[in-house]
Length: 456
Image 1 (tube, rainbow, N blue to C red):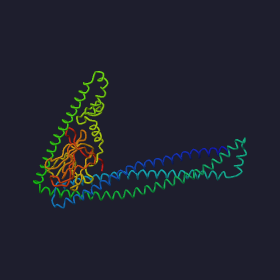
Image 2 (cartoon, helix red, strand yellow):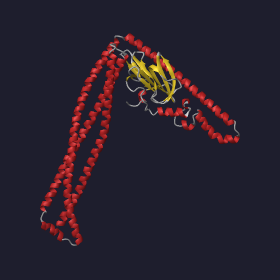
Image 3 (cartoon, rainbow, N blue to C red):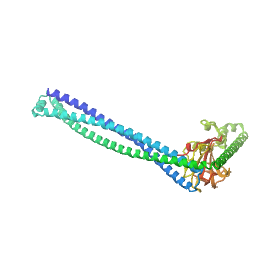
């Protein structure tokens, strides 16, 4: 009878111990995985917040410099609009952090509740185990249990059962201690999350107040521009005329570059064909492969090289293909090391009645800032466009334009690397210290530069 009681109780404890160990391991793993995933997201959001705060501070400093002129300008309204956009993006990022913290707190509270219940269960099981041991504490009963063995092997098994029973109680104590430690750690994490949530909510409140201030500042600037609508309208027309001149110049340069590339490829092919005909029939058979290779190297696009991309005369050399493919990785360096985008790609609004269009991005920088090539390429144009100095660089079948320059230090047909200084920044037509940066295709189609540049 004693044997059956001990065996039954031991088996129950072993089963419960395994279940508890599995539960603790699952909880610890789940908590660890959840913490890792949330930490990554939290880190990304914090980095984005820091970047946006830095941009807002730089825009604020830029506005202070512009306001020293004591006259509303297109740069001023562009800067304040960009500042509002950055502030709104910052608030959205803070909202994401708040939602993330809400989810973290909720999950932590659930885990604390579950672990407290599990701790109660462990303590109850341990209490029952101690009560059972107390009821069967008589040495006579244990001796009787051992000496009633039918064989020596049976006695050894019974001793093993008793030792296992003792280890089970020790394991129960260990599980209770570990669960208490994990629970305490989770409670600390929950407390920290609530403190962080309080700080983030306070930050959100401050940013919302600053956003209202920015909007009032924008209204004041726009109101100032309304009093100069005729002057501003003239300035916008001038910028639009300059944009159209830039568009025509780029189209002419692309047409010229394509014509020169096609001419070079044609001459190279004729030369290769003439060399092939000069040899006898046997030599022709042996040199067919060589001719094809020479033709490609001289400037003819092979089927293999163009198999995965649209053919372009501007990619008629291996170098041209390589530059295009490097450009298409969309991880280009910025043309300047400092500055903020004040006019984004596409349509922009100045006042309710006045708006404009930009084929690139305008970056506010101090006059004299070094302007650099964003990728490897060849300078295809250096000169005046619409009354401003500009440099155009070809990167395979893509072109980049750098305008509002005060000086240039490169020449046409010069090969440049990513980071090569092309010139110095100047002042735009409307009087802003900035540069205009554009990206276009071989068809002259403007592309949004922000999609091609590295994140800052």
